[in-house]
Image 1 (cartoon, rainbow, N blue to C red):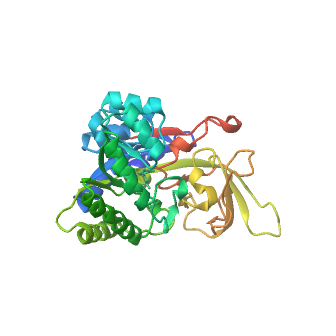
Image 2: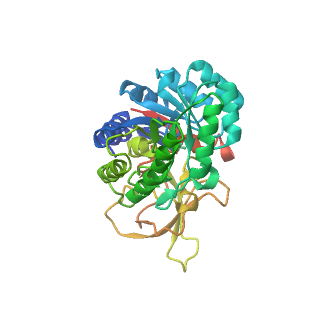
Image 3: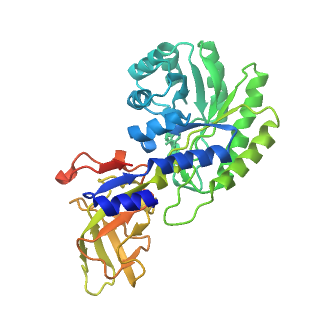
Length: 376
Ligand SMILES: *Cc1c(COP(=O)(O)O)cnc(C)c1O
């Protein structure tokens, strides 16, 4: 947690649950990534945290934006982004949304199927398009599954088709899965996708952009490789694949820009020893899966939890949210331990909750007020 957040929490004791987000930390993360990977142009993945203060700061820093919907595109424009600096990166777009993005002058569009390509040709004639290729997501704590991307072979056909439809087939993209902890995943993906650059070049389609997607991790409970390790692996893989003829390189980081810039403050609603014979206590917080912590599904993302009793004796716990839904459990199998002194009414902090939390919060499930947000 940053000093600024600690001071804000101490001085304001804001009502919980709430997210306190240090915009300067997001700037710091952006700059660190830019320094580590100077060949790449950063398209911030808006869905990680679309709050206006975040977008406005990134606009000032010269960031481009990866948007998934017309609403995200219009948030970027409202924050001062140029339309040409926005990529419509969702491979699944409503026709009306494509038309509106095109009217705004949005620069580029993702696709991974012939059907979507036809929609783009119709509603964004002549637009620059890039094809998303499915790559292995091993090593990712939050994989993106088989929902997106196509094969290299199919991408080749689609890129040729794009040209025939009057579109501008500019490049290729992939995503190695979110909270990716293996640098090798980028190396493998770059090698795989780069082959198609050569192949299409021979077929007369000269691609000029490779989009490496997002995936760079934030530190949660466990250590992760630093950004320098990813930059080294990516740099070496690009050199192997392209030598000096490097195309424009795009990255779409979300989590690693905003993740550790936010802290959720929460109140302990109840600590109970449900079975006297079982040493595991149940700790119920005033935020759970439906309050914004959706990435605890399958206990995939393991947040660090700080309490006022840290440093004292701990015992095993299961941790759950406050709602009447049986699925509203954060951690049962991940060997969480919290202080034995933890009790009802204590304030706790969930660290590195700046990404993928506010937007996952439900409207008012069980009547609970949606997560409050403070950008400082
Ligand atoms: C979600 C998403 C990202 C951001 O991923 P992170 O793991 O948060 O960096 C980037 N690109 C696309 C297409 C996405 O859907």
